[in-house]
Image 1 (tube, helix red, strand yellow):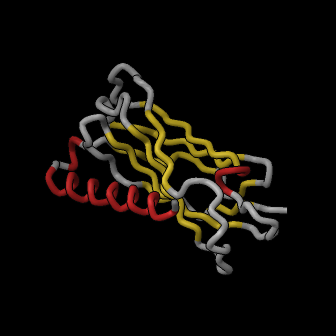
Image 2 (cartoon, rainbow, N blue to C red):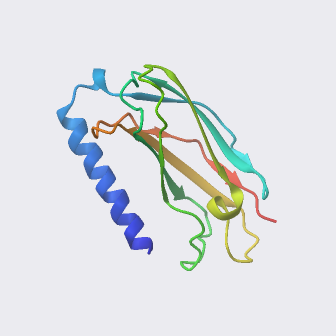
Length: 150
């Protein structure tokens, strides 16, 4: 199952590189990370706020978050809580060129360990958006996010 997510990630990155090389960066939608909580309690959520610009074609597109665990002590291979690639459909916002996007993931089931390891988890996320016509935004990288596990 994990290899399927890696395949989706690799295809997405190939798509981004291919489209990015053929399009002018002036017409691309742009994401800017406005805020994100960097410490997430065991029963809390990671919350990120993004500012969108040049985004009139993003209605009904996809917002994608890709998780990368960077723990000093790796989690066991059998621990695969949550998705590594998390696509979310962007609602129709009637062609507005600017706006804000709020993204949240609960710690339980998406961010934290599944076993009884009692280890904190350190993550970095990459975020981007894709229009229905497969034009991609810039990629935004989060600061380190620490998920506290009891």
